[in-house]
Structure formats: structure tokens, C-alpha cells
Amino acid sequence: MTGKDRYERIEIPAQLANVMESARHKAAARKRSLRLMRYSSVVAASLALLFVVNIPGVANALSKVPVVGSIVQVLQFGGGGERTDGVSVTTETVADVLRINFDQAGETVSSVPSYTVEHREAPNRLIFTLNGVRNFDYDTVKNDLLALPLVEDVYENIILDDSAMRFVVELKDGVTHSVSEYRDPGYIELRLASTGKQATPREVFYIRSEAMPQGESLAILEEIYYEDDVTFIKTAGGDFIAAIGGFDTREEAEQKLSEISSREGYAGDLRIDSWMSNAHPE
View 1 (spheres, rainbow, N blue to C red):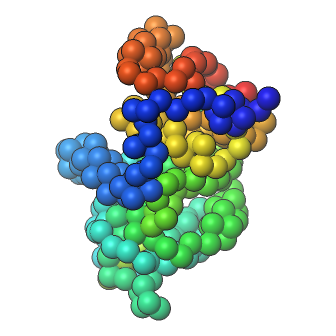
View 2 (tube, one colour):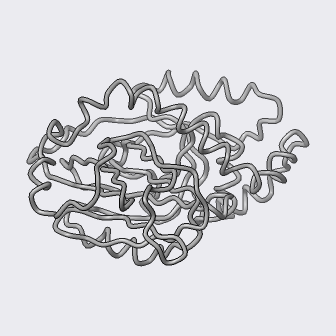
């Protein structure tokens, strides 16, 4: 029996029925507000330190790519942009830079749509979420990203919101990054640079689901465990898991799982696992 089959056989408690029924309608608004609130204070406090001249190795990439428009901010994690809808997305690459362009009704937008960027370990990856977008050629974005020599892998996350999209960029070892937001015209640039050093691998602990194909079963888990900051990781075998944490010790993971399992309606669908920071789960 596959992981997906096991999830489909789990009886969904009555308390979760409304979550699954209404998830498609309220996912976008909730994701925008909670994720931006989560990062706003950090970005505000750290903005001066995050400008590209202070990000080791990335400053050299500035001279390779012509800058168009006015810079709004440069960050390594966080979010920005403005609430919109019906935006189309295209990409282009130069050297170690990916430029994400936006237009609406055939016209270049002045400001980028609402977005967030998360940086996670085990493996080293960036999670991009773009809100208010309707036309998105994921295959082109994937091919452009894989053309960058410092990118290891790219995959899409299915989310229950037809006006948002999310993709994950796995970086090779010893890679640093910055994300620049511009306006007039509005676009986002991902800049990558090698540090020339390999990080020492360490064991990382997660609370995880069973492995299953990418699809709605995983997206439902995000709605159920949204407040636990769940993410999705590609396994060594090519399937995907929902993962909570990134803990330094098993004890921390056990404490979090105990908290989750004590909730009314918990379906018993999670377990603790660990793997090295430069590896993938099985």
C-alpha cells in the first residue's frame, strides 16, 4: 500500500471537515496575512544588513546583470510586493541570476505581486510563494532555474489556491543567495554565488508524513498543519513528504509531536525522522 493510499484510508475527523471544504476559498488570504506577519518584524529589523553589498559573494553578481527599475529591497528570506490578481509570470536567466517578470493584460506591472521567500535546511532550499498570479508556465521556470549552475533541483508544490503558486529551489552545497525586489517595472531577481566552502553536514530532525506523490493529499495536510509551519520536501525516491520542524535534537521533535498529537481530531499520520542536512529523506 502506498503512502497516498494510507492517507486516503484515514478517516477524517468531523472537526476537520470544514477545514477541507473551505480551504480552497480562504487559503490565499490566510497565507498572505500570516506569512507576511511572520516575517515583517524580522525584515524591518534586518533590512540594513541584508542589502546586497553585505551578502558575501553575491555582490560580485551585481556587475554581471544590467539593473532596470528602482530597487525596493534585498533579502535572504521574508516577503513583499502588493496584493493583486490575474498577473502573468515569465522568467529569464543571465549568469547566476534568475529574473522573474510580471505583466497584467499584456502590460508590465509597476510593482510585484505579494510574495514570500523561505530558506530551509535538509536539504538547503528556497521556497517561493507568489500570490495573485493566474498564468504561470512552471516548466519554463523549472528549466530556467536548472540552467543555473548552482541549482541542484526544482519542484512545484501543489497548494489549494488557484491564484497562487509555489516552487522550491534546492541549492548546491556552499551556495549563498539574495532576492531583490524592483519596481517601475516590477520584477524579482534571485542571485546565487558560491562561497567556496562546504558546510559541515549535521543531523536534522523532522516530524514527517508518509511519502506520496505530489498532489491534493499533501495540500490538505498543509491546511491541517498550517499553524505548525509545515513545508514539503522531495524524497530520495522522488516522492514528497509534509515536514514540520528542522530540529537540532530528537527531544525537540518529540515535544512538538506530543503537542500535535494531543489535539482533538489528530489522525495519527505523523512520525519523527532524521537525515543529514545535505541529504534527502527516504
